Each structure stands twice: as structure tokens, then as C-alpha cells.
Amino acid sequence: MEYSVKTSNSVIESNGRDNTIYKHLSILSKRETEILAKVANGSTTREIANVLYISVNTVETHRRNIIKKMKAKNIVHAAVMAIRKGLIA
Image (cartoon, rainbow, N blue to C red; front, top):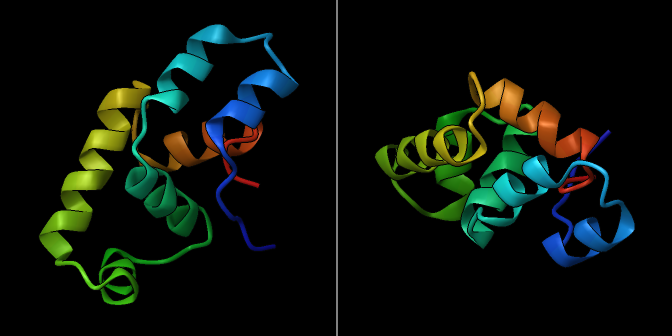
């Protein structure tokens, strides 16, 4: 199964049950959401950097920001939350 990015507006409109999680997901930038989808697909930091034409350090910074913004324990936890809430599908 391959995950892709959904717009945050459609996520919020489709199911408003857990507004706390939605607030965390909606504050992700487009690039952060894109990286999170690639993580959910099993891509490594180096693979993501190569595909997006950015440095490994930049990907690592985005990953840290995703974890912080979503208040996740790690990047896998962030990806699971995003999948469950429909941010990436």
C-alpha cells in the first residue's frame, strides 16, 4: 500500500471527532506532510532527500519538526496518527 498526501481541509471536514489531533496535523507544512507520507511508505531519510532534491540534514530537521508539532513519541508514531486521522492515505 502506498500512502499519499491529503489536504488538511478535507480531513477536518470529514471527521471532527478528535480536534486535538487535527490541530497538530493541520499545522504541518506541505513539505512536512509530504515527508511524513514518504516515511509511512518506508522511505529512508537518504531516499527522501534524493527524491525531493534536499539534503539529509533538511529531511532530519523536517522529521524533528513533525514529531514536535504532532507531539508524537517518534516519527513512526506521527505516521500512524496521520494515517489513522486521514492526513495521508
